[in-house]
Length: 388
Image (cartoon, rainbow, N blue to C red):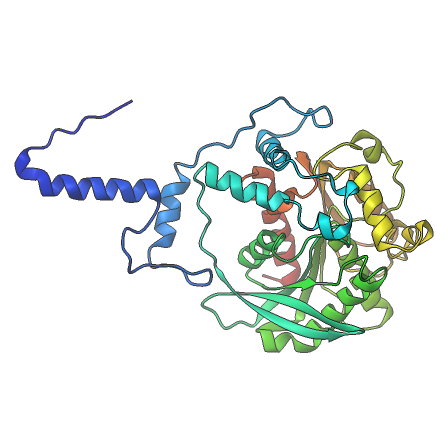
C-alpha cells in the first residue's frame, strides 16, 4: 500500500530531510559518517538502529517441501538447511579432511539468510583477543571474549567447538561463544584444539584439558574469577567438555562448577534409535559420523573407549550438568542415555530437548527461535551455577 505525501515547493528542504530520515530507517544505518563501527566498537546510536530494524525483520521461510527425514522441522530451521544445500558442495563423506574444511557451513547459511532477509548483525557487546598457549607437542590458539565496559572479575566459560574432531574452527562457532559471553556476562575462552587426521585421538582431548588447566592458573590475567569456571561444548566439543570435567576430577584439580553439553558425542552405537530415524538428516547424518570416527581414531575399538563413548565412563563426582539436544539429530538418543547414566551416577543433570530442529542449531539465534531459547536456557543454568 502506497502513501502519498503532498509537499509545497516552499517545503523542498523539509522534503529532503524527510527522505533522508526515511532512507536511514530502511537501511538501518546512523546516517552519519561520524558513527562508524568496527567489530569491537559500538557506534553511539547502534542499539537504537538495531531495535528499529528488529521490528521490521521479515520472517524467514523455506521455499520447498519438508524433507523426508524431517517432517516436523521448523520453518526457520528448514530455511537454513535449504540454504546450505543450495551451495551444492560435495558431501563430506566423499572428501578428505582438507577438502571438507573448505565446504560451506551452517554458519555460512545463516549469514547469507540474514543478508537476504535484511536482518542486521547486532553490535558486539564483547571484546576479543587471541592467545597462544603451549601444549604437549606444540601450541594451540585461544580466542578470549570479554564483556565490554567493565573490569570484572567475571566468571569464565571454557568453550569447545564442534566438527567431529576433524573439521570446523573458532569462526564457525563464533556465534555460540559470543552469545554465551554476552548473555551470561562472562569471559569465554574458545579453544582451537588440534584436529585429526593430522592429530589423532586422543590429541583433541589432551588439548582440551591443557586449555582448561591454563584457564584455572591464569584466570585473573583475563579478568576472570578462578573460583567460577564452567565448561561448555557442542557436539564433539560437548564430548571434550565432559572429558575435561572427568580429567579434572581424576587429576584432583579445580573442577568446573557446571558443564553444558550441547548435543554431545557420547556413544559409539550407530544403530541407536535416533541414528536409525535420522540417518539421512542434515547437516549431520550417519555417514558423516562414520567419517569422523574414521579420521579421528586409529581403530573402531578406540571409538568404544570411555573417552569417546561417555556412557561407558565413570561419571561419578561430576559437576552439575545441562544437556541440550535437538530432535532431528542422530545424536539425540545418546544425549538421553548420557543423562540417564549421569543420574544413575548421582550427578545433578538437567536435559532439554528442542523439537523441530537439527544438529548445529544452537548457534543460529539470529534466525532460529529455538536457538535463541536454547542459548537463554544455557545462560540461565550457568548464571545459577555462578551465583549470579
